[in-house]
Length: 120
Image 1 (cartoon, rainbow, N blue to C red):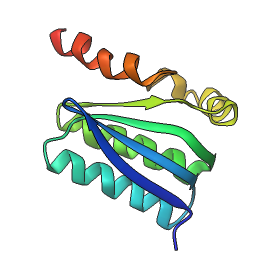
Image 2 (spheres, rainbow, N blue to C red):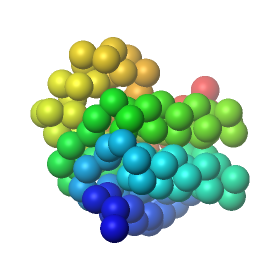
Image 3 (cartoon, rainbow, N blue to C red):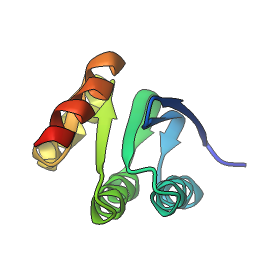
């Protein structure tokens, strides 16, 4: 049994993946990356990862975020992050990943950001 639960919902043409649990070495990381690959393969390339209920993340989990980011971007889309905990924000800051991802505190702004970037 995985320590991470994934559920997806759509807001217009944006897919929001709600994560609940820990993103870590092993099954949880590969499960997350597979979900992102599946979305990209289905042409869903506006993806927001909602990390509000993520209890922890390790280097493998960060690797999955980066791999997912690359997968979505390669398919002409963008992967954005929503509602990072203080601990996850700290990790992203230490690893300089805060400069890679667009990070939002509220879902409405995150979803709206795709409209702005699509025109660019």
